[in-house]
Image (spheres, rainbow, N blue to C red):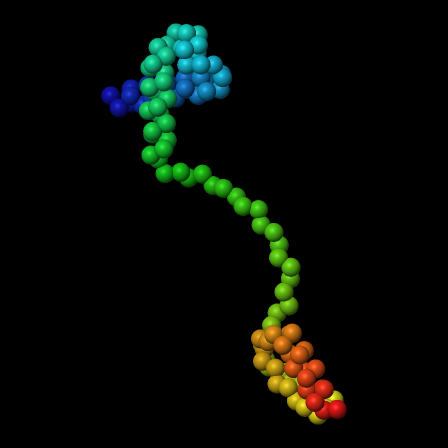
Length: 111
């Protein structure tokens, strides 16, 4: 019995798909196919509910853009010896702009 119901649903799914692809109104498509337009519309609604209640397994893709390469951070701190004799210890992760300002200030202080 369930097999007959499934065959009927499959048959109506085919009809609804052909109707959607035809571009015809329900009344015109039903007339051409020898169907009742209200039954056609009812099946479209019922089949739509079935699709909406099933979890979607559809996949979608997102375009990725490659990011500009980033120089790896040094894993060890380093030390800068300035001409003025000052030494600056720099941690592996530092703000380059802040370091430049510090060096400029220290170089200016040694004059």
